[in-house]
Amino acid sequence: MTITGANDSGIRLDSTSTTLENIMITDNESSSYGGGIYARYSNLTLNNATISNNTAVIRGGGMDLLFSPITLENGIIDNNTSKNGGGINTWGSDSEAAEIILTNVIISNNFAEAQDNDDGSQSGGYGGGIYNRSSFIFSDVIITGNIATRQGGGAIFDWTGGSLTNVVVSDNIAVEDDGGGIFSFWSNLFLENVT
Image (cartoon, rainbow, N blue to C red; front, top):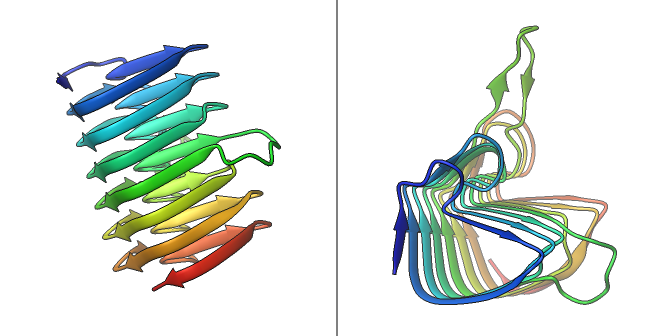
C-alpha cells in the first residue's frame, strides 16, 4: 500500500491502536506536525515500512509521535524535512517502559532545517534524523547522512533514557552547533556495539 500526495499528513491517528505492514508513505506534507504520520495518544506498529520525502513545517517530517508508542521493524526513514526532527520527532511520558522501539531500521538523509523568524532570529534546526523525548530501544539501526542546522545531526536524546545496540552512526552533520552524530541532553544512554 502507498500513501502519497496528502497535504495534511499522510496518516493521522488520534487515540487509537493501528498496525500497518508493507506500506510506503511518501511525498506527503503538513503545515504543522508529522508530514508522513501524525500520531496523538495512539499506539502504532509498523513492519516493512518506508517513510520518505515527506515535509512538516514545525516538527516530524517523517513522523511526529505525541505520547504515542511505536514499534517499527524493518523500516526506512529517508529524505524527510522539518524544522525539528527531520525524520522522526517524539514527545513521550515519564514511563519507564520503552515507548520507541526500532529494529532493523535505516534513518538516512533527513534534514532539520532552522527557519527565519520575523525578528531576524532563527528557530528549529534540531535533530536531523530523530528528535527523541521518549524512552527507547534501538537495535540494528543505521543513522546516516542526516543534517541539522543546529544540534544533533543524527539524533537528539532530550530528557530520556534507553539503549542502542548494534547501531551505526555515520556521516551526519550539525552545521552550526554540537552533536554531529548524537546530541544527548540530560539523558541516560546504554550503548552496546555502537560505531
